Image (cartoon, rainbow, N blue to C red; front, side, top):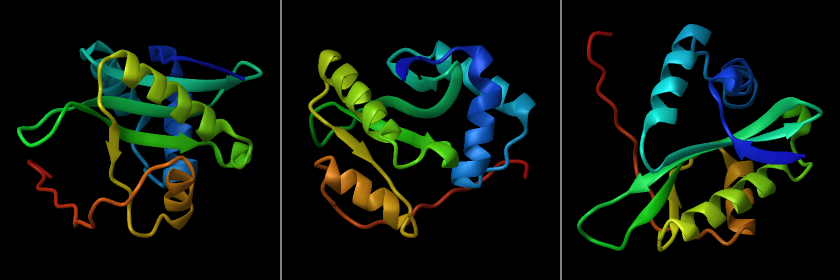
Length: 144
């Protein structure tokens, strides 16, 4: 397995993982548009795990800057194809992302994980992440 930066051609695999692993049914054409946008952002990265020439997982990271603590990176998404879970793919992705975050001058990594994602919580705790606070995630859509 190798970890590398994502490219636009990874969009179909990322979309498949989003559906199978996260239950996010976002159309492929919009996945391509979003991936193209994300890949052009400064200090935002998507790393993919590739096994036998197939993308089997990915992690999306970005800057997390605010006025009340040091610079952090934010894990936006960490997802592994259901057929490859419990094989160390997520661990390799998070280790790679942490290395990049340190090299980029970040003081740590933060993330938000849904209340119902118990296996994800255990995974993050196993990797040294601590619960800082519980919160409710709000969203307001335009034109929906």
